[in-house]
Image 1: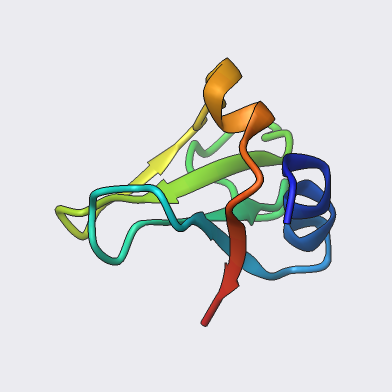
Image 2: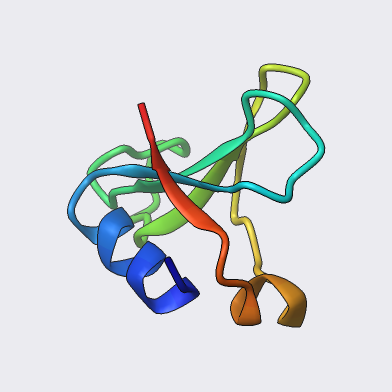
Length: 76
């Protein structure tokens, strides 16, 4: 699927990844605003990446290559 479809899947609560990513087990998930990481601050929705090192990195940003890619997939 394309990037727009991947964004819609994220909004539906699904995890997505690119088939072309080298890191095993890497995926993206929408982190909703209700999942506050900082007490006393209102958080906005953001996209988080589960890294190959098994860490969650909030604030993932897409490159132009990722935005134009057609190999996005929904993952479990």
